[in-house]
Length: 287
Ligand code: PDD
Image (tube, rainbow, N blue to C red; front, side, top):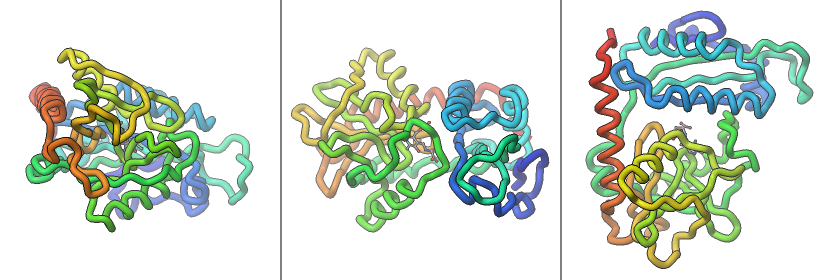
């Protein structure tokens, strides 16, 4: 594997950053994960805009222009052997002796990698995701795609210990906010319902895509708070770049609806995969 690190393409084992990088010391940085299908990136503009917003929110100036970044992302993708890939971009504030106060004129660190995009197994798609809920222990700026992911690591581990796949965070009134690495939806009286965009959730690019697809299929969309025990709730779904849309069929050991993937999750997933397939046949350029 070849990675971009601070101005150079290097073999992964040589692609290193300084121990005084503020990303390492303070998680002082942001990231993006973008899917690429056979050379075509999914919603690239939206990802780059979100990266710029995340940088701006913590007052980091990206080290290169948007066009230069686009070119580096494409080159990183091309230099690696994966036709369907997940490109990871991380920008941190840079290297400085450890001190909370930010020194003037730091050069941000930027790392880009491109790895194999593994889609969920057929078995997982047919049985659905198994979720648990936990009270949200994260910070109050979940709208920033920060590399400070300790709560998400704890949440994922907790899910695993319960034989589950994902932890969904809930607020102190038991509203479902989002998962550790996913946005979460319910189908309530036929409408697709998801928490509104605020400081408690990340504005997922796949979330936007799911809402767009639902609207195009005349499925009502409601961006509002919701709870698992709401009357009329028949399905739960989750979305993220790495999994597209997935049905969530159990929560805390109890079946959601029938306990099997429901019609809305199945339809939305199918439509999203069609969009991926269309991208894939776009431009077969991978070496
Ligand atoms: N996670 N919410 C959180 C907290 C996330 O970390 C993610 C993505 C999402 C979904 O966002 P998108 O649809 O843009 O992928 C929602 C990435 C995949 C990760 O951390 O690896």
